[in-house]
Image 1 (cartoon, one colour):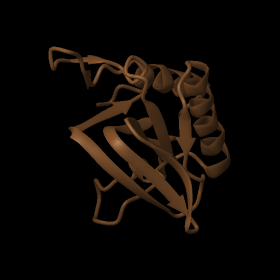
Image 2 (cartoon, rainbow, N blue to C red; image 1 turned 90 degrees about the vertical axis):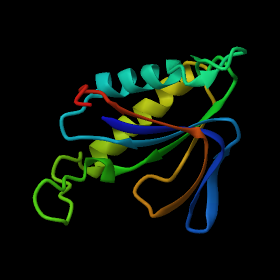
Image 3 (tube, rainbow, N blue to C red; image 1 turned 30 degrees about the vertical axis):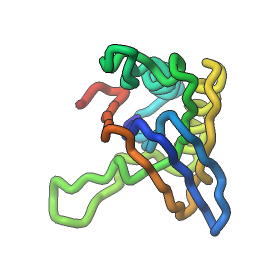
Length: 149
């Protein structure tokens, strides 16, 4: 599983001209699911992201998590995180999980975040979405459950 995590002051997602989720202070998480991913990967990612210390404390040091600051999460599925451009210029998505498995693991990820006490807003799985992200910092972190980067 791969995630692009951005610390935000505001973020929202729209699908079919309907806003399906929006948050103020918190994290926008673009989440991709790979063919080899399992429920353990989804739980790992949720716990890692919930505890990720990328918010400043009173000394302006990144030392607080989204849980610590009372922030929310906007989760958006994004299979293109598995786009491989090692050969040529057109991405191959052969490493991305199929839609059924990806949706199941995406749901597991969101459910686990909620069980950790976080408010989670979502995009709509397998639709074209518009995502507005007001990146704070800017702070952007890449996470891979297989620890490839």
